Length: 260
Image (cartoon, rainbow, N blue to C red):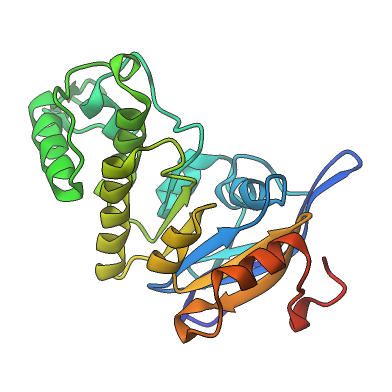
């Protein structure tokens, strides 16, 4: 694969028994590019993300990430390779506070000379948490509150701050603002803009047409488990009405004729 691409999938497919949730998805993401994935409910968008990140094991197909063919055993392994993901389910530990959630699985330690016995460096994690929240513009009144005591919007912002706080080779956000108010949505969109400014590629799964046209370089449309359109929206050749036409099947991209 060309070094220009950070992610490529070939014939990526997922069947659940007789249900074909994803079929033959060929997808490419360039370094520094922000691509939005759109489609109706059940179109295969989240299924596609789950195959890339190892949440589920694909039926067939190939995933090439950062120049290497990969098959992740789960999201933790994907994260170790450099893929940070905000899932719709958030994947937060409700009984832990904000610093513990931000550093879950990558805790800072001190006194490493004790061999296998190490102490967690809570002070460093608290300081880095405050810096991360300031960097991303996320406002949490008390970082020592456990996640279960927070509103849905605050939880979502913690998950997004965790993702944006660590340098990654690829960030994936699955409907990151679906449950957020106007102010919290603006915070998340500013985080996405910061990632763009830093040259970090991103896949954004969203139903929000205004958001997608504001933030993405391209839109990849899924319909009935297949990719049915690949639209360069920065060219100015497409409108929201065009996207809706592909989502509903009124239009089919020439390169995908017969696939939808």
